Each structure stands twice: as structure tokens, then as C-alpha cells.
Length: 120
Image 1 (cartoon, rainbow, N blue to C red):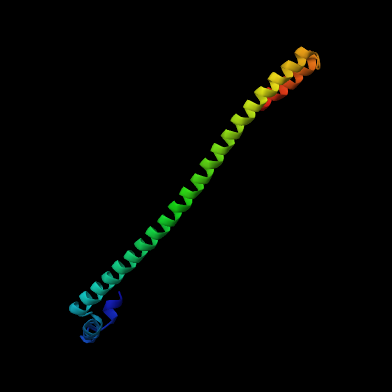
Image 2: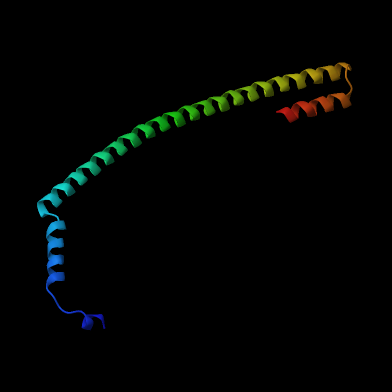
């Protein structure tokens, strides 16, 4: 409906063509800028890759150190438990000798024996 009221003139076409001529990028310039962008993106990607590698190495060292500490703690705890269980067995034997000698009663022996066995 609006086209009927407007008289046809080549002026809008000329304006559009001039706009296209001024603002249409030159193909060579466009390709050069595109290649520069690709080069910059590649460099940034390489930097990010290097940073990720460095951080990964640091993190793996930390994890390795923590694992080593944990394993050594577990080993020392296990050794302590073995020693303490051996000590407790010796105490039970000594308590048995005291019971045989009549120094402690059977009830006291059973109570102490239960305590020591619970620790093992």
C-alpha cells in the first residue's frame, strides 16, 4: 500500500549502491584480517595449552605428595597396631601367670583380658 504513494526514483538505488561500495570490505583486506585473527587465536590457544600443562604437572605433584603422606601414615598406623597387639598378647600371658599364682582373681583376669582383646 505504501509503494503506490511513493514515486519511483533511482535515488534510493544509488544511495544503496554507494553504501555498498563504501562499506563493502575489500576481499584481500578481509582475508588478511581473517588470517591475522586465526594466527592470534592459534597463539592464544598455544599459551592456554602451556598453562594447562604446567598446572597439570603441579597438580599431579601435589596429588602424588599427598598420596605418599597418606600411605606412609597408614603404614605407620598398621605397624603400631601390630606392635600394640603383640604387647597386649604379652600382657594377657602375664595376667594368666598372675591368675595362676593367685595374685588376681579369675573375674579380674577375664575383665582385663576383655579390655586388651578389644584393643586388638
